[in-house]
Image (cartoon, rainbow, N blue to C red; front, side, top):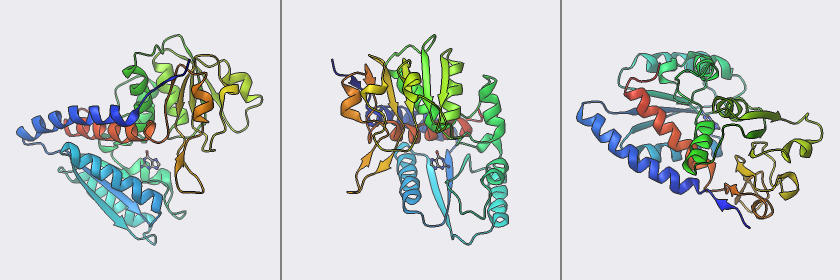
Length: 283
Ligand code: GUN
């Protein structure tokens, strides 16, 4: 049996269609959801991600602007801009695209965005609230992953979830969200010994390593659910995940593709967070 493919592109479209109605209702009440994205420097991948975020925002009726700053921007200049946006009542969400140039400390930037406008869900207050199981703006990729699992009624409670990768953006928070859903969670990372020993015990395997096609059917338990967070560019310019899709598909029960998997869900969750912030429901 071959796995069922969870198409994140279609699910994200469905979510955006529902959000369009929510945005219209807000506009009738005089609230225009507004996301401001800041891009420092000219990293082509970041530029492309930021444009994708703007396009998806506008499709749902969310006002979105991109503030492009030169790579020479100082940390102080960026902090001052964020402080202005924090005070601007017309702006509901602030996102600073990462990575930043080396002379700007990421944590200073993340900690300056007011938590109620932190639509990335990266501020320590939002992360802390997520850890204690309280309402918060959730990090978009982990939130998108859990939404994908729930969309297929995949049971999380009591399942063994194995997360490969421990980044602040994906690995750590997705493990926490799965724990909040009563999964038993194992984290694996670059120093983990005998990776296969762990992955072959996973009912749900989340792969966020950033190495193309390193996970294949030999790493899987029969009928595992496989979520591929990797976005790797191949020599010919196409995208590929961290999972060898065809190999894993022959053993998994569900699998996400790359592209058209987790990526579009990340953006859909960003829009969801922006609407939540515009409704005044974020902390
Ligand atoms: N760079 C890669 N992923 C992300 C993300 O989810 N948010 C931000 N701000 N930057 C990123």
